[in-house]
Image 1 (spheres, rainbow, N blue to C red):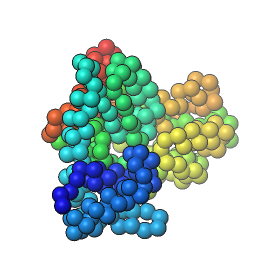
Image 2 (image 1 turned 30 degrees about the vertical axis):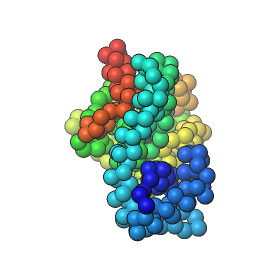
Image 3 (image 1 turned 90 degrees about the vertical axis):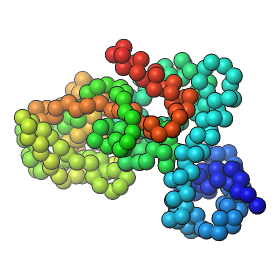
Image 4 (image 1 turned 120 degrees about the horizontal axis):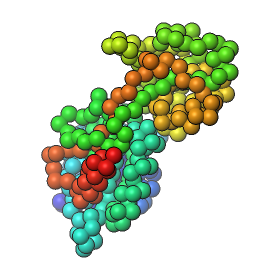
Length: 302
């Protein structure tokens, strides 16, 4: 009996979602239907693709190899089908983006609404993920990252502000009680609050001045994952609990109001802004091509 496309799609959905329930919610297919599709597929292939437990699923080695090869093929099929669903000159279909939390919060709000208004037949799905990912294997059409975290063999173009900064800040009450750091090493004697990535590694506190690059690992009273939890860092800093280091865009309202004060500004030079990146190894889906053109036009008007 031949393997049907629906069973392969079910496998990809479950693998990406990390479970049958979440895959059912996203794909609008029942969990039992997905489970039956997996049973058929593994039976026809004669190999186990998923390790199953009562709490989670994970890919076997064979499943990981299949997903890596299958994801680009399914993306091509989706693009082909979506391209003919709306018989107009307008691009149609789904654009899937994988972006870090900072981009989702400070860059995309200035781009996505205008893009959707300009392209009414396009649907956008945004996955927020700060770790390094293979965008093709993740099912995304494109990713947005900073230059030092781009995947190899990808086409990249600027998106959003061309420079950004990480600023160190604390509440006036904290600085009055504990003193103002004048050198990054002074942070070792301060109460600091920072970020921990999904890998488990804490975000580095890195500084640069006059060609000298310095990294410190200060004690932390509070660690959070990037994303909306960064609001907890900001509110804790405003309450006078310690020092934080976040994107200047996030801190701007609190700096303007005086709730926070910047420190070590001469150790916080600007760096290059984010890049939109995508594979040049396959035909671009119409929604991605439209988004690339829209991004280039927006960059030319900056």
